[in-house]
Image (cartoon, rainbow, N blue to C red; front, side, top):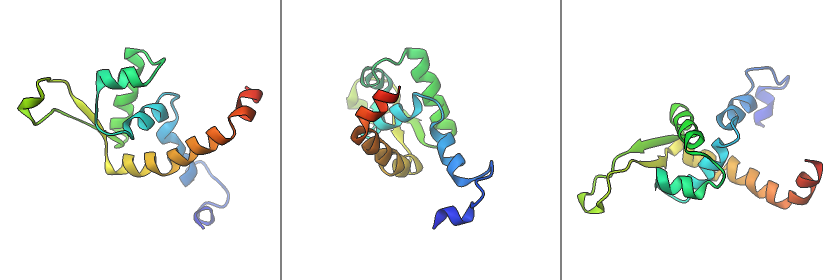
Length: 118
């Protein structure tokens, strides 16, 4: 069991390291949006309702620094646009489709109680 490696839950516990990947309110939202596949920044801004341009930029930078997201230029000249494309790295894929997806499922199942307490 993974918790056996961290039974006292000290500050360098594995749980803390994982939670720090999404410690900003918009980071898990951006990761969830990128689960749909590689996306241009303007498309992400449209998908992430409520996030300002500045907030999205900051979130993308944080996620890149953490190795969860990579920014690239399109390689196909026929695409016709020059904007960067953001996609999940393999680490980002495993996190977004694993624990983050499970957290989203749990939140959806408990939405009424979570809203009630807020």
